[in-house]
Image (cartoon, rainbow, N blue to C red; front, side, top):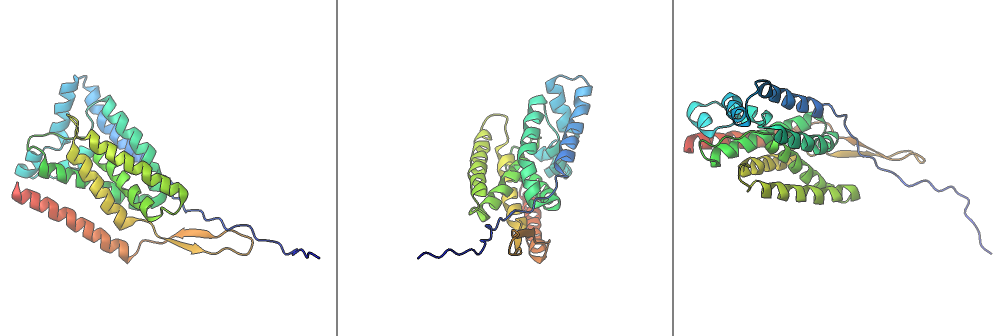
Length: 251
């Protein structure tokens, strides 16, 4: 005789990652586009736009090293040379930036973006030719790739996240390869990627699992900003300051 157990079986527990609202990506794109408009409105040829852009805020190592125009380390990341340049960068920022902001949250994302931008600019200042002009958001965007590499490595047991790791790794290698082409800043790409890896290490989200009731799914909540993040932010910031100080002193 076979007995059947009529006790209801609870459905499998479903874990859903907490995703932040997108607040920073579109303002960042707007700032980049607005910074590009004045150069087009002057009806200059492409060469004229390039030199004007560099003069107003592009990253020229000699301007930073000899005249301490440190603002160029940041402003260069919001300037672009032509339609194709800004279109490709804004397309990349929109596509992968949304994932990063959803996973990291707006505050962590913006801090990581800024640190990556600075990291790329500092490496350009340290290793590129003194009169080499560099502009564009590519370094900061490579930082987003670095952030997502760290995130997907830490949570690679989740199938969708594991796929993200392979995608970000291929994108990182491709863009480093592109950096070897004439007119493309390898040091900006590499520096931004390194900054993003450091930011991903510092700010990678940690989760708390809150068990559901017998018939409801478990929930995951994002742990709040804490001492660990503050300590790691201090280390990353100190590393960037030390790298900049060393660059100013040696070069």
